Image (tube, rainbow, N blue to C red; front, side, top):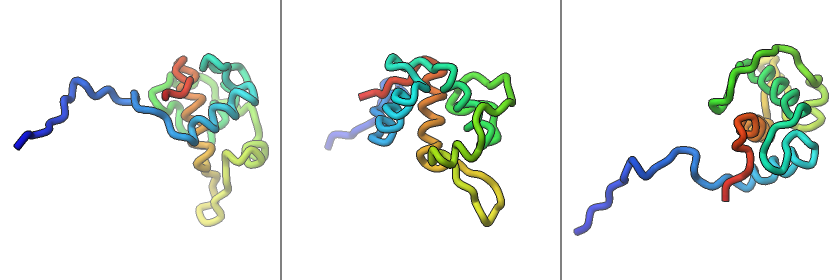
Length: 119
């Protein structure tokens, strides 16, 4: 009977294909000019990245470089209109929606120059 074993050296984390939701959010980020078509973060996108990090309460996500500014570039009401943030009535705080989490991933990967979706 053959035995199957996983070769750990062949497994590279993060080298799998991206989800359909990532493709949709990435194309939305390109249309809103947060990211270029080559996967590089624009100035508007960096402001959105900083604002989403502020909602999250972190200085870095997805191994991106830490932020150096704590200024919000967009209002929470604007983030709610874009459906990136929702207000949690029970805990009295703002949380990222699933769309907001994926947008944060797109922007963080674009900050590192790896924003183009993988097929």
